[in-house]
Image (cartoon, rainbow, N blue to C red; front, side):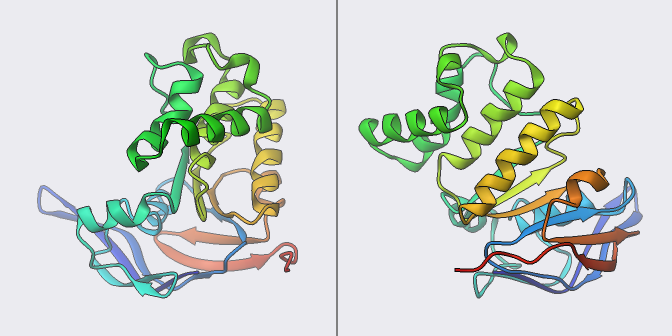
Length: 230
């Protein structure tokens, strides 16, 4: 589903070059749950941004569902992400002025879905995430765990093929973090491919495979458990 070949990303600031990724070769299959681990500054988020089409590599190639996408323009990448790729961030990124319902509905508006279809999808996700009683609340009225559940609901309401999660439990306590992991596991069991950046060995152990980065290089790939098929 995802494959990179000699993928590199170099940032230049004040004539100083910083190598964030160096000649990364990975492949992620449809339906996998993959953890990306490594120390801070090793290139985890940079890799996630490139795989999620938020950024382009400096060199190398990237295939998404068999299509080479590393050279696409920003507009082309935006179009390809729509309805196919969703993100979950550590900071939730909810809009304070919108209710829970409106936050979840927002990506459906960008997709141009009808009012009825939006209503049906949002209601189904609210019920699945056990948030239906919070639909009229605003982010400031929710706990951190509840806000992250809303962020997950917003990510899955588009029915994406892939979810990229960047430290989705980083701001949560262990109980809420465990609940978020349970929801991501359920989504993966339902067929969604999940690629998650994490510092937590406990959470990484719940995935199919761990990709370890160090100084922009892939240093190991450890299979944790067999992916379900069929």
